[in-house]
Structure formats: C-alpha cells, structure tokens
Length: 327
Ligand code: PYC
Image (cartoon, rainbow, N blue to C red; front, side, top):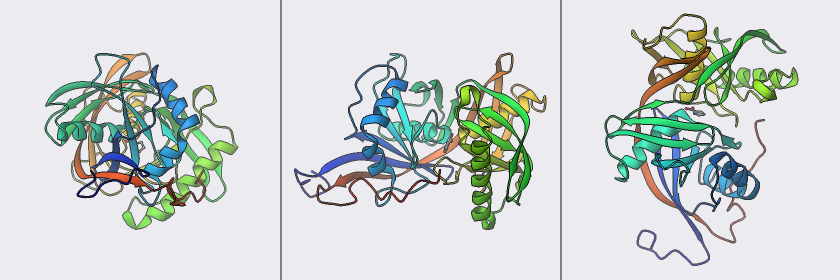
C-alpha cells in the first residue's frame, strides 16, 4: 500500500526519507534501489554508475528532486563494525563522501529507530567515517583523512583575472579561495555561482588537478563571518552547478587541512564555519601523520519528509528531466 492507495503493479516505488542538514537536503533511499551486489563500496559505486544511472536521475532530478539534493543509497557494509554502508549521489553523478549527507543519514536512521544516541561507523566509497549521534538532531562526524595538496595555486579566469587558491582533499577535491571575488551575501548567490563555475572550468582547461589527475569539482570562496563567534563564511559550488546551503562537511574538512598546514589552527581548537545562508558547522581536527588530519565536523539535521517516489512506465520523465549538466 502507498498511503491509502494500492501502488499499481506496473509502477516502481522507491521509499525515501528526506532531511536537511543546516539547510542542505539529503534524500536517504531505504528501498527500491538497484541491486549492486557485494564487494567494496567503491566497486559498488562503479556498478551504480555503469548500470543504474537512471535510478540516480529519477531520485535526484526534477520532477521528484531538486538541484541541491544529495541522495544516499543505504547498502550492506563490508566491514561488520559499520552500522551502514552509504553511496552518495547528486544531480551530476557520485560523491566519494558527503559531510552534510552523513549527518542527514545519521539523523534519518535515528528517526527510524535504527540507531541510538552514541557512536556509530558508516562505510563510504572513500573510507569509514565515525558518527556521533549526540541527540535526535545533533551529529558530529569524524571524517576521512584530509590534507592540503598544493598551496597558493594561480589559475587564470577570463572574467576574474588571476585567482589564487589552495587545493585540498576533504573527501572530495576542493579549490579554496581565501578572498571571495564578491561579498558573501545571499543576494550575490547567482554571481558567486557563476564565478565559481568559471574557476572550475579554468582549472579543468589549465589541467590543474588533485592527486593522480583527479578533477577538482568543488570550488569554495571564503570571507569574514557575520556572526560574533564565527570564524569564516563560505560559498561552496558543487559539481552539478548547485551551491551548498550548508557550510559543506567535506569543504570544511578541506579548509581545516589548509588552516592546519598554515599553522593557523591548532589540533582541538574550534572553528565555526558559516554557510552562505548563515547556517553553521563547528569543526576541529586531530593530527594523523605528516600533513594529514582527521577533521570532526558537527551540525544539525532535521527530517522533513517520508515518501514513496513513483515511476509510472508511460511517464516520459520517469527517469527525471535531464537538461544537460553544468559541467
Ligand atoms: O557536506 O560534504 C558535504 C557536501 C558535499 C557536497 C554537498 N555537500
């Protein structure tokens, strides 16, 4: 049954729970997802990409989804100490890790009664993350090892001139620009997004990459915080051309790696990162090995919907409306 109506046999139903983490949405897929078999999560992610990309589009794109939405497919973990395996995806493809998404998954699993207050481990395609559920809405995640790869890299951007930034890994690849080309205000979201897109394209064309030629698909602009106790405000451009409503968990991790590398933040010291909409993550780190840190990022998430997504076989948009990609 779907609500009070029988789901037509020919329709496909996908059970989801939606939440938002500091404003950024996450859609957890509970059932109706593709069978990706067993094996390492990075292999299952490849299988997802190769054999079930229509499913990603159906869940994330309009008319069922929205550009900022990140999907989280729950899978059986390989590591038996983990409470869940998770593969993250968005309007452009797949994410190795997602900080706001992990906070959203933890709050969703708590809402469903599948995990309780305490510490849990989630397996992702780029490693295991530890999640502390502090209350039904507050979560602290210990992210994957993060590091700055290159400092003060210059990229020539036609509309902006020379833009200087650091390249860092926080579970995804980021280009972090200390001085935002525009003030970080909500009214500037559109021009900020355009500027970040230009930077991303310039990085690609000038072949400026992460390690092993990995594409840098997130761009982060920084400026002064607006709250009295905040340390910084950011604007984060995501791979599908959407901006992160939250301060971005992996982006905050990349920022901490740069602060640590510059000696500007000590292990254990708190860093309050504001997003472009004024929501916040509180973060700190511990040292792992030369140049590598383990960031902890804390924030709040709230469940906002439980739903069954329906795909009718004669719907021309059953796999979402694809109008080309921002990249
Ligand atoms: O929170 O890590 C994050 C994230 C990545 C893309 C959107 N949010």
